[in-house]
Length: 231
Image 1: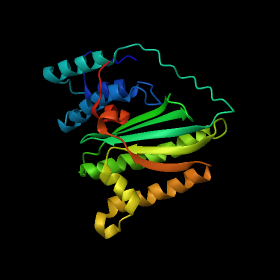
Image 2: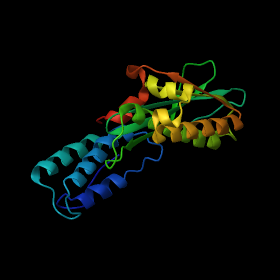
Image 3: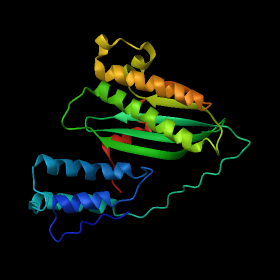
Image 4: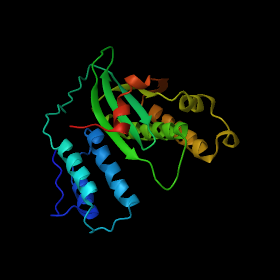
């Protein structure tokens, strides 16, 4: 993976193009891209014009960020499912004050090995502010949606009987379990409860049983997608 802004002088336009040019459809390097996206978000906060050269301090910061992702790694991606095996999907979700993270793994039944299939990191909208529990619940709802899509893609080649969703937010998990009324939690949570329950039924229609459980923050692989990493 390489990051190169096309302009002699760094601009918001050039940096936006540089970030968009990184091909990562499966999200495997999303922890590395998160600091770049947060930097671009800051440029919007600075209200810089598209083609205005960055101030020296910001240009220096961008150079350092870009160097951190200039790396080359081999990522094993071949997955050869055995027709005699059954598998489960494990989806971990997390949220921070800036972003949500999702990591979807495929695990052979009765084995401890796991393969990362898909990951995603998404910045929160700056136009609205939500509490951390609601952000965690938003991450969980996005995890269910992406897992349903993954399950549909794998259906023809892999037998998946269970889908496990793991969150480190006990409040988010309690909302799924108790299904509180709209007047208790508000529209934001109520709508996502409906979405999660609907998509859980669609997962069952694919022949898999969904489960929701707790994972400790220090063990949550989705955590790195919400705080970023360096190469």
